[in-house]
Length: 291
Image (cartoon, rainbow, N blue to C red; front, side):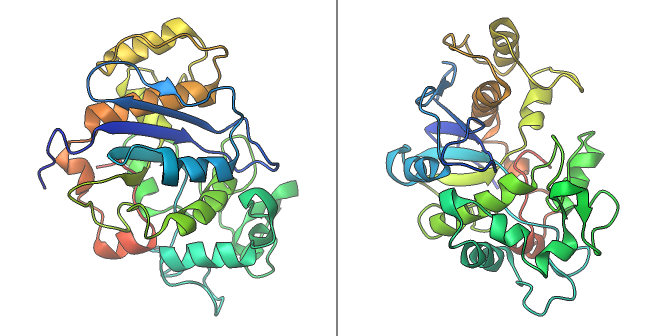
């Protein structure tokens, strides 16, 4: 599948958060246009909420944007032919999963997902607060097919069923599913939706992929100073960035990954990964950048 170099006019990355509360310091939004000018943070002093990020995506983001969300849009399915084996109400594909998360968490404030995590049937498959392992949580947790492919690329993905520890992404993923459910039909979400010929598209990103491509070696994927960020940006064909008031992982991840999306958006093989079947695309999804 050929991708025109000018298919997208803007490239954005959102570092996501599953934290409790009305605003999450872990959310950062960066965007850039064609060319080599470095990505900039959107309202860096705002203190984003998940609701505000949803509003930006639907009402303020340029309509020609490829935007990456740093969260898992689904849970493992293929290995057991179910998200939650043994549960009669286990959804059959990702969009149904998003709807279930939204329904169960309807009363959770700030697009949180605590009710889903503590649901009697679902908790049996999770490792959650207090280190409690559900009876069906296996080893370090089940992985999606795209996460197994990440491992083969030398990355270290964490199961979205693991909600404990600094490396866990499960909470972010579950809160992100509520956002994806609300975006359905408004912005295509790849690969659950096919890549359209024009308009904005949402993809899943893994910021470590951008870090590796920018020359940051394994174990040092987080950037916390201006000079290191500029070196990494240069490796992605980007000019130096505008100085930030504060250099934290969230801001630098978003900036670097937006630049990486710009440099890689027209790579046909990233839109047609060989291991991604239509069944995987509809149940588990895929991480953009994993070929």
